[in-house]
Image (cartoon, rainbow, N blue to C red; front, side, top):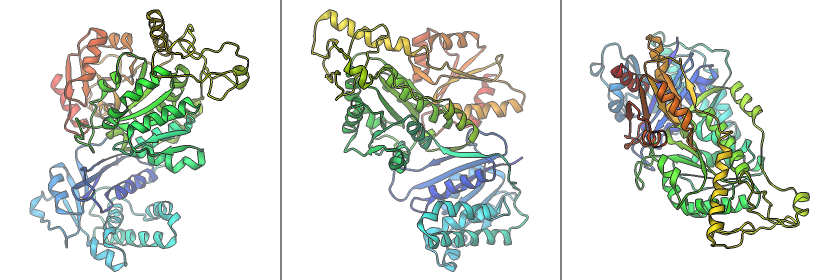
Length: 579
């Protein structure tokens, strides 16, 4: 069985992210299942950066604690990660830059000194390309064919010309050859190419591709960790798919641009993190009052204020559920994995237009900036199943036939037929004040009650088609874990490990958090022998939401708010304590 955890660490500016993603691509090309995750401080240069890549010939869901191959571009990397080394780990480093002694570690640890800087000089490459030497050297520790890396370099740098490809190939090949010659047979890992065909996809990429598949035509995104990947992906595909991608001056402008684009008749998107979402709050109320469809991707990270900007958290749940004054209907969905980031973003656009309301896709840094391999078949299935549904938009013929068009007509399901400004027979009259059926300013008490009730009827209809929570594992189990969002990933990995030890637990994932699936959650809690809620915040926002909506209490909780994701080892330990 192959299960390798590889980390490259060093100072910002040495291509840690590029090298890590390259290693993930190598593992994926070998047909292995891959999960990766990145950690870095909020600095332009300096500070410790680390890219975690785990690969296995079995389906995996998250990172793990033990590190098998540690690529240290400086001494700090060794000092920070030496306690995480597995019993037979290898440390790859430049002996001319980093001093390492065997007596610092157990005899089973393999030291792999590679003159990274010297090799870059020999091949005429820039010193910053020590990371490229390192990725080639790393490959030689577990695979004996360099061609897989050469193919990847060609695909990455081919558009920059053969000269750029050649320098990357020569540099990485030199590292590969050095390790193959000097450490042949010393490494305990051997990977073989597998036949399965997987896609390596990041959470931000998946969400952006979901938006493209759903027909988004306008996106206003001010760059902010952790949703920058959404902006980058949409920008890269804007010309091909006729999308206007705007980087506004701030998030206030961004949300209003998105509202304006949606009002004008196109599917529009705004994306931000908690800090930017704070600025969008008044705009959310405008979209609700005017009943303009809107999708917002909100990437959680630790706060308050700037907080812990490049780390992960799940502390914005209550915020997004209640942001903007007074009550108005909205839908909040939290994808749990990379495929769900794709599918739920697609569905968000359908729900927004069918019910003419705000849909918030709630994600976090762990999901947005991580990558995983997903079988191409799963993406094909979800892509084929999805159909664009734009709801009650009047055609030109229907609009022209109107004799007394009322944009906010009181209808049974609360969703009034919608015209697009400029259509003959339609009326484009909307404002931020309460209004009557025609959109005219109205402060009468009876009208206010009718309009509030009309808007909330939408949720009564929407909840009929919102997917039910997902259940994983055997029905009968001593512990039922309950969670939302990206906690799904380490929980499923912990379940996999526990099952191998003969311990069966199950997992209840609530993806659609508002409107809350009261009956399904209540029934699951009542049927469970013990319940454990896992979430990434200090105050137990999800646990409190369950108690508020169902009147039931969870037996135990596991909360984490240090900016780091949950590790499956932590969950396994917690389960064993409860058992």
